[in-house]
Image (cartoon, rainbow, N blue to C red; front, side, top):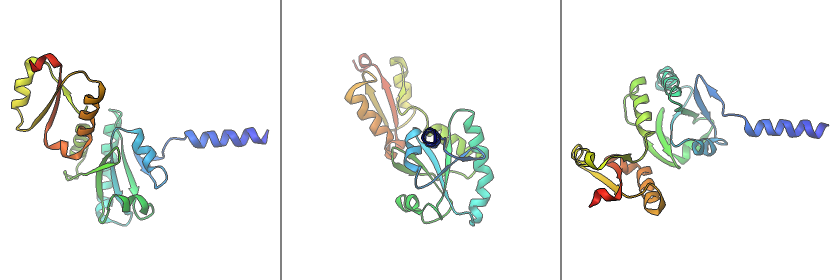
Length: 186
């Protein structure tokens, strides 16, 4: 009977959700990678509790978290004074530092420290990596920006996977990724 109780407790610990404070996921050295893997991308605030700028950002970040939760999007925080392994891994030297992390690759957030800017940034980063467009829209979509990468083909297979990997690289933020069917190339 005791064995069953112990196994039940272990099972609860294994499936327990990540702790959150006011809607913000709380990351640690232990849960960092698994939590990043659960999300297509996650904005992480590396902070120090004593930092005045961090304290000023805290209610703004909570408000952004609650707005993003309505879209099933999440943001997280990590106390870099306690969880030094992850702070060192991402080169954190000042507080607060905000980084969008996708597949272990971090991009610095340089936007405004406002609820609106943070929510807009997370929504943008969470969009599909390549926008699907119809043949007749292709000319207008590519004219809208100077630098475009257009994939002509099926949304599957090794070429599609390559496009997805390109889209996950921070450099891809400098251009627009578009996807359309192969017959549009003719």
